[in-house]
Length: 273
Ligand code: KIV
Image (cartoon, rainbow, N blue to C red; front, side, top):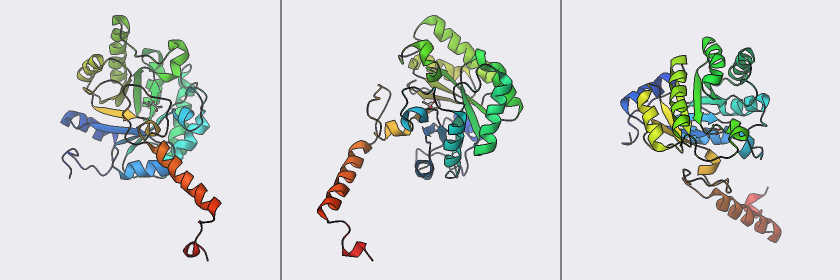
């Protein structure tokens, strides 16, 4: 076992994540939206796969996460579920399927769980969505919370800058974290907030806190897979570490293929019948 992999869980569950927090083992989470990528990152040992509504940006090319539909999220989630053996799979509830009406929220969550086979759902917001969270939890569906920069509210924020830098918003965020924990959320994502505030929340709550642009004093990290592999290029926030430059690799390989086809070099004698 590698030293950074303190445990060797066969299957990650919400209970395993709680155990990991209490043992001080960091949680590694990435997004995936399709079978092939999900299979690769599951084989590599990722703990949690988020079928994020960031699919709206990276898979469909929209500028926000708002347009993606429940049916599209279920399609992405079921593709991921066919690939995954070990990771816990969490699916984002898309914009407009839970905010206003807790009964509709429950129906949306049930559709995701029934039609994709996912393990849990994620919802953006605090106090204002707690009624929906309660109803979903009472149906036995695990819920991951998401506070800080919540991209489904981009039109309210007006910009993707760091959230909760002012006292009032930071206090509200801490209250919301306690509300989500008390409601029964099994984990919490904190996006793009000061590292010091995230560290405070991590100590305040017993549930695992996963950060994205929230410093390293939290229980785990999440990144968008296409960002960390260097497939997306325009998006370059300070918190993003790029582990690869797949844009250049793919352009290089496709360029070689084009050259080989055009020059008649491909296929050669061994590559034909
Ligand atoms: O949709 C998404 O990818 C997310 C992560 C950025 C946390 O919500």
